[in-house]
Structures are given as structure tokens and as C-alpha cells.
Length: 317
Image (cartoon, rainbow, N blue to C red):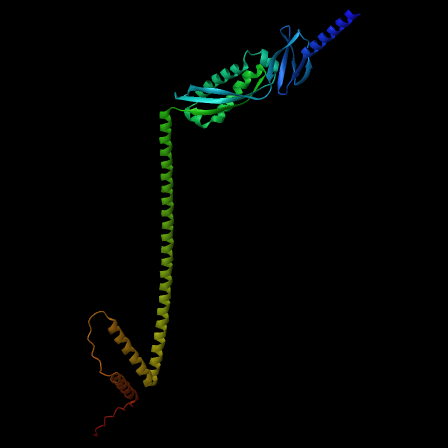
């Protein structure tokens, strides 16, 4: 009875140990592959699991999280025979733990070599200018090629990014000179365009100014002609009135008319730039008196009655 109790206790202890050996807890973000006698049987997802001790064992612990892999810098010869150095990064995620474990020997080295090889292929088919200006195109082509190659391994390539493209020093200097020349060319073009616009605006301004001046001269000429016309009309009217007054024998009108002409003539002589010698009465009253005498003479002549012609007597026979 005592021997049976010891055997039972020992069996119980062995059972508990075997159970504990079969307990497997998978953490979040990982998958475990299970092998029985060296053959893959199943994949354990995150959580609590039991396996058969001594028969089953954990083959590999695979991370299911997205991972980052650096691509080391390498030299690439472009299509136009320029030597450049390029590096980058690869983002990938294991979608099937069993394939990632048993379809490829070392998935990290496999992805690295595959990416480096296709990087040289893609960049080698492009010119230097395309490499420097079309990184998105390079990233897209690399992503398509590498992702298709890794699908049988149960791996998804999410992104491939080129970090740096380093051309040779002499090419960098030549590009800097070219960029400087291009900027100077653009600056000269902008200066020429600005000068051209300024000249156009200046010419337009001069044109508008000339038009306005011509219009002003035309308006002034029109006003002058109108003033002369009115002055001539006034002069003609005044002359007509004076003529009527003379015909009527008005001495005052004659005096006004003669005095006005006399004063205008003196003003013209005074404004003349040539040397002049004018004999004038010493007193203004003399001038007025002379004018008055002329008026009286004309008045007397106009009022003198006409003598009738005498008839010749006939001689008697």
C-alpha cells in the first residue's frame, strides 16, 4: 500500500512536469512554428498553447511586426556612365511565418541582396538627371520588383526608400556651375523683360502725352480762332457803328475812332524790338486837341452847303 502511494505521487509529479513542458505562451507580435520529429506541423499564434513534450518542439520564433532593413551604400553606374553612390531602407512584414522560416534560409540576407541587386539594375537603366529628379519613380520600380520576388517567402515589402544619391565631386561642381549659369540667365531674362516693359510703358506715356498735347494745341487753336473771329466781329461792328456815326455827323464817334487807332499804333511802335524814333506832341492835350481839330474840320466839310452852278448868260443877238 505504501509502495503504491509512492508510485502514484511520482506519477503525478511526472505528469505535472510533462504538462509544464508542453505549455507554450506566444507573445503579441510573434508567431511560433511547431515541428514534430523535425517536420513542420502548425503555427502558434499569440496566446496560450499546449504541445506534446519530447514529440513536438518550437522550430522558430518569427516577428510579425513591420521591420526596417538598411541598404548599405554601393556604387552604381548610370546609363550615361556616371558613377554614383546610393543607399536606402526597406520596410517589410512577415505575412506567413511558416514560409518565411522554411521557404528561404535567411530572409534578412535574402531581402538585402535582392534589394541591392535590383537597385543597381533600376538605377543603371536611368540617366544621372533622372536619378536626381525622379526618386519616386526609382522607389516605385524597386518596390514592385522586390515585392514580387518575396511573395513566395510569405513576406510583404511595404516600402523602399532611397536615402541618398551621391554623384562624383566633379559632376557636383559642374552641376553647381550649370545651376549658377541657369540662374544668371533667368535673372538676365527677367531684367530684359523688366526693361522692355518699362520702355513700352514709357513709350505709351509719351504717346499719351503727345496726344494730350496735340489735343491741347488743337483746343487752344480753336479757342484762338474763335476769339479772333469774335474780335473781328466786334471790330467790324465797331467800324460799322463808327461809319454810321460819321454818316450821321457824330463828332464824338469820330474822335473815339481816331484816338483808338492812334493809341494802338503807338503801342505797336513801343513793343517793336527795333530801334525807333517817334515825334510826339509834348503834351497829351496837344494830341487830343489835334484830334479835335481834325474832327471839327471833317464836321465843317460835311456840313458846308453845296453851291449851285451859275448859268452862263446868253448873248443877245
